Amino acid sequence: MDYMKDIREISDEQAVILWQASRLSLSGKYEKAPEILSVKGSVIGTLGNFSASIGKAKSKKTFNVSAIVAAALKNGTVLRYAAELPEAKRKVLYVDTEQSPHHCLNVMERIMRMAGLPDDRDNENLEFLALRKYTPEQRIRIVEQAIYHTQNLGLVIIDGIRDMVYDINSPGESTRIISKLMQWTDDRQIHIHTILHQNKGDENARGHIGTELNNKAETVLLVEKDKSNGDISKVSAMHIRAMDFEPFAFRINDRALPELIEDYQTEAKAPGRPQGERFDACKDISEQQHRIALEAAFSLQDEYGYKELSKALKESYALVGVPLSDNKLVKLITVLKNKRMIVQENGRKYRYEPDFHY
Image 1 (cartoon, rainbow, N blue to C red):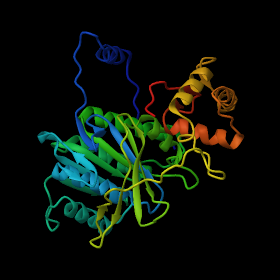
Image 2 (cartoon, rainbow, N blue to C red; image 1 turned 180 degrees about the vertical axis):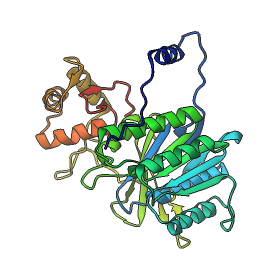
Image 3 (cartoon, rainbow, N blue to C red; image 1 turned 60 degrees about the horizontal axis):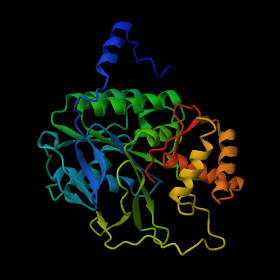
């Protein structure tokens, strides 16, 4: 099947017009993207961009996103999410690709209760679509029509971006749906937040579509169970373009609503690394060591294949006092990719991204 069949080629004349329209000028004035979602002052969502939540099964990703929607509906704060949507952008579109209409209704009611709004009647600022029964192609078309024909739209939730493609490991399909997200957000000046599962064995978002999300999203939130208490879910920023925020946590209360855990403390790390503790390339290596090692490695050449990259990193990190076994090297490369310190787009070679936020 040709998944790219609906992408139309443009003529030379159209390309010239788009080329001229895309040129920037130092004398021009370009508006900063309006900030509509934040956590304790750290911006996680702006109009014209998209973000994502990832987490393993049962980590309560949908509960977390329900809090984001509730904050948007009340244009206030829910859990740690603060929303400030412009008056002409108050409408929220929630798209669910996985659950039955009955379960989707439960999510709607939960959102309304969290926002302090009536849960027994429709709200003009929330439209909810249950798309479980449709094909990926049909879902894309339905969502596109809804986005372009919904007045005052500001925020779109796609709960199950995986179901917008047939094969999550297809580079073509992944590029196509991420391009759609960028097109929709730019054309309509909205913010889209998507949800995707993590791999079972590591922190990476699942499939090639996960790689594309990591590379292109404004923010990627990680929702995970607390290691010492499975009833608690912790939210942190895996990738964020703005200033990072302190992780926060919630539990589900007796009204089946997520409830903030005040003064939540992440596990403190003792000085040094105790014997037997797992290597953590983020905590055990400083930002300065990372930067020096990466600049040294990529001063030799601009791009590397995986094997070449491994060899170059092993040598450059040794120069800053970080010896790496093969196992540690694999974990290091995973962290560098997740933090967007190195990027790999569309299956090409790895390159260094010096403007990273550690």
